[in-house]
Length: 382
Image (tube, rainbow, N blue to C red):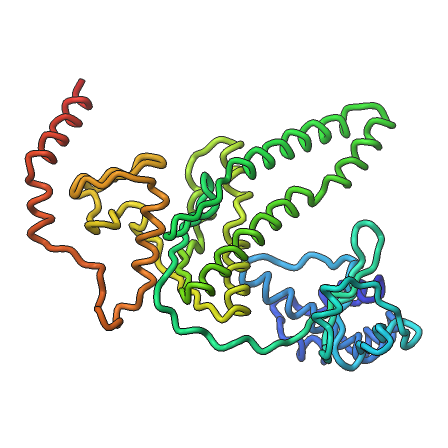
């Protein structure tokens, strides 16, 4: 692993930063990788491929690749082989080919049964143990033609609410994150200001606690996504999700407290979306991404939004429509709007996302609306 990482760092330093093609990188440093670091032919090829892939990812995020740590090695079919009969993997290392027995559970054994994987990644975890991450390819089932849509509204107060009425509160996750944050802050302070033995113990505890919060959030997202996909499969439904791409960057531009910024940035909505997507593919359930515009401001019953720009019928978790009088949970209302947006507009019954213009004009000139507006203006004046 050290030789592999050293080779990656060498290629990253020698080859110009703007070069992202693995073939170009290989043409420039292949011979040096073999002679300087003792890598086999295919391990040298995998070094070039990793450097190129990391550079492409960094370029998309407008960053640069700084360095590589000796924690993993990429393998392809030429330097990796899985033998189910002996339950071993054959890997090319520095001094040749080695057969290493696998210590796996029933879940891994079932998924590897009858498979012929062609790629893997050898990893060294923080606890010093070595793991082999084997990639297997399966053919997903055909997507079932949906007869209805389940809308899923993602948030922080409620992690997810579906248009069928299922919800998962975020209170426990919020409390757990805050507890971890307080613990980390206390240990980090002691690790810098305490005695030598205290600092050493605090560093060990921080290392042990590292990843617990992430694993807790990951487990919650697995449970939520599995439940939603299972229900969608049983009811022959598709799943509609909001496309929240870029929301973290937009919210970070707003002035907020340090605590609120931490809570927002630890919101793992994208991970939940990824879990829902790949589980749906495995179950043959269709997933539709819809625009999040006005899904939280529009009434799902009459499809109206507040006629005055900058104002909304939503107040926190409460939604009260000034047009039809609907009162209910704001996130549940949003999930129903998402479900409506997930229905294809060319369906046999046509699109339901339309409202009567005369009704809209009548709504903003109705006595109830005028009295409400005058009351708000009077309150502002006072």
